[in-house]
Length: 528
Image (cartoon, rainbow, N blue to C red; front, side, top):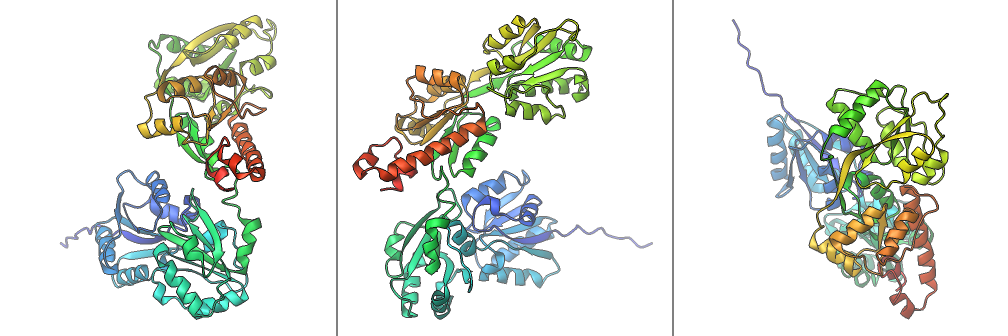
């Protein structure tokens, strides 16, 4: 009888290009390889913001380590992991085969029986030049360079005569690049753009000439991208990344991480750097009996309507449903009303379409304006369930009662003041370290001031609606932005419009007045 021994399955290796830095530029294949990885070895050139985004999505047990040593050493680390049955990834900036060391690693792995793949990434030079607003048509030279001595300066000089080129190098090598270009016959006055933190939140581009770009880029560190030639002039019209309305603005978002997601994403789309600071912590009600009776009443057909005033209320009801093994089918026959698009989306996420979402003002008053009075003939069940926070106002319940409805006003959750943020954030709030703060409710105003202090007078204050504006004024804050429609998208859009108006005003101000203007952050700096 032959006995077979079961071999431990061998893992695999992937050399993955991270692209130029913006996490959104990771390819789908790169994302999938990272999600499946057990071990990630990364280069120093991979930006921290991209690493943070990757860490947030990979397996909890995945190991991260910095790639150190010669190519053979890194290859051995990858092979050791693969031979242990793990999936190993070497994450590199730009494209894997844009780095001589990574090519040598792949060659070392290829000499073994371990499977490997190479996932291309957008090169840093090519990607950053696009983010800087410099097209590279015609003769395209876009190279990520690890060793400046290997650069073909004669070819670069020829490219300048026909258009432009881009190279990604270490900031410490800029002087060597300048000397090489001048020695190859490139005219000293040819235009050069140097971009630092390419595709990142603080990308910055300085424009000068071949003979002066080293001095112009003083203070740049890490990898930078040089674009050289006539096409640099197109930055005036094509610099889209750095010209977004809120580019570089540090914006305080006083909401919990769960609530802040959509707002932070919109702010980032406009170029802002959001900082989420929870001001409210959500806790279960002290006595669950009310919610228990409410859930039983929903199942028994006691209610004609459920009115949700917040995402937290939706979550509280569904958590209680889950405890009892219930699902969306048990809402059969009950109509749903929601205040606000975010609340309505939370209901839809559970497979239910709300019957009523105010088309006008997203508030209790807006809902009451569209809520039909109780009719004994049309509405044989005349009771409304109103699950909400323990500190909710009486406006909605009173308005429904006036319209002939019986109301079960149930405490679905409690809101308590969150713990104070770290000292550095508190200092930034009080000293003007934030360019703007967005308030989405009166409680966010009260609680932020309570746990961190009042925002500096220089900080732009944006509020979601009139009630929040009143509370901000009560605390001595000057309200700069209030959207015509009370919603998170409109709030962010209104802040972006305000930033554009502010930038236009600053552009026409004398320098002395600019220094005393409300915003001393990135917008003002552009005009100094």
